[in-house]
Length: 516
Picture 1 (cartoon, helix red, strand yellow):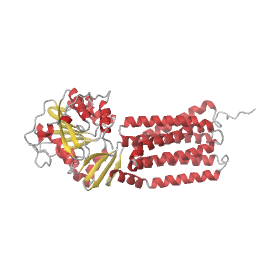
Picture 2: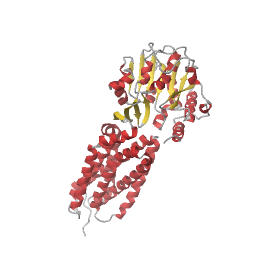
Picture 3: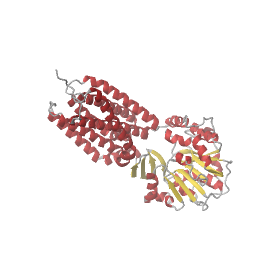
C-alpha cells in the first residue's frame, strides 16, 4: 500500500507557495491586531491597558477560530479561500470603520472595536489550521509544524518592525489596513488558481475575489476622504494640517477661535487663549531666576514655550528636547504655525534635540556643560505609562542633576480641580526627589483651572518684575496664582515611581469621571 505523504527532498512549488502564504497570513493578522491596539490607544487612552486588552481578546478569538477549524472536513481549499476574503474585508476595513465610529457613534466605539477584534481573530485563528491540513498532503508530519510556525513567526517579526517605523508614518492606519487586506486577497487569488480543479464553484469564487479587490481598491483610493470625513466630524472645525508619525496623530484645525492643536485627539492648545497657559508656564520661573542664560524646554514641540523664553534678552541658548521631529518640523516650517510661535523654532539661539527626554537626561555626555538655569517641562498629561515615566521620582531626580543650584524647573501638571489627587501626586513626587515644590494654577478657558509646579533646590521667591508685553500675567496679580481654594487644596498622595506608575491609574480614574 502506498503512502499519501511524499518522500523528503527538495521543497515542491506548492509547498513553497503555501508556506509563503503562511508568512503573509501571519503578517496580515498582526497588522490588524496592532491597528486595533493603536486606535484603542488613540481614542480610549492608556496604551498599555488598551494594547493588553486588545491583544488578549484577539488571541482568545484566535483560539476559538482554531477550535472551530475541526468542523471543516471537506473542500478545505474552498474554505481557506473564503476565509481569506473575509479576513481581507473585515481586517482591511477595520481601521476605517473604527475611525468613522469614533466620529459619528462614539458611544459604540468600544463595542465595535471588540466585535471586530473578535471577528478578525476568529477568522485568523481558522487560517493556520486549514493551511496545515492542506500542507499535510505535501509535507511529512515532522517538518510540517516547524515549517509553518517558522514562517508564521517570520511574518510577525517583519510586521512588528515595519508597522511603527514605516507603515503608519507613510500610509496611515486606514491605508495600512487596506494594504494588508490586499495581501489577504492576493492569497485568496493564489488559492483560486492553485486549487482551481478542486473548487466546485470556480466562477463564484473568482467573482468574490474580484469584488473583494475592487472594494479594497475603492477604500484605498478614498482613504484620504474617509479620514477627512471622520476627523471633520470629530473636530467640528476645518482641518488645515494633519500628519501621522511613529509617535502620534497630529491635527491642526482652524475655526472661529483660531487654530487648535490636537495630539491623538486631545487638545493641546487653542490660539484664543494659549497665551494664558504659556505665560503661566514660563514666566514665574524665568522671572524669579532674574537673568537666565541657559534654558531647556522638554516637550513643547509647538514652540510656544520657546517663544516666551526668548522674551528674556539674557538668554544665550535654548535646548528644545522634543521626541517627535514631525512636531518641530511642522511648527518651524509651516508659515501659519511659525506665526503662532513668532518664529521661535528658527531662532539662532535654539538647539533642537529630537529624542526621548528621559534618555536625554540620562546621557552622561558633557554632563557639566548640560546645566541649566531654567528647565521648562511641557509634556502631555500622563494618559499612559510611556508618558507617566516622565512624571516619576526617577525622572525628577535626573532633572535635579541638570538644574543649577539657583535654578528653577517648572512642570505642567494637569488640573488641580478635576484631577486633584493626580496634581498633588506630582507635588509629592517632586519632593521625594529632594526638590522644593511650589504649586500654582491658572485659568485657561479651553482647559479650565490648570496646574503647574515649580521645582527647585532653593525655595521659590516671587519676582519683582515680569517682561513687558505680556497679555495675562502682571506683578500685582501673580501672587493670586499661588493661592489654592479649598476644593483644590493639598490632599495626601503617593509617590509616583517607575515601579508603580500610580499617577497613570489615578489620572485615568479622575478624568474618567468627567469624560462625555
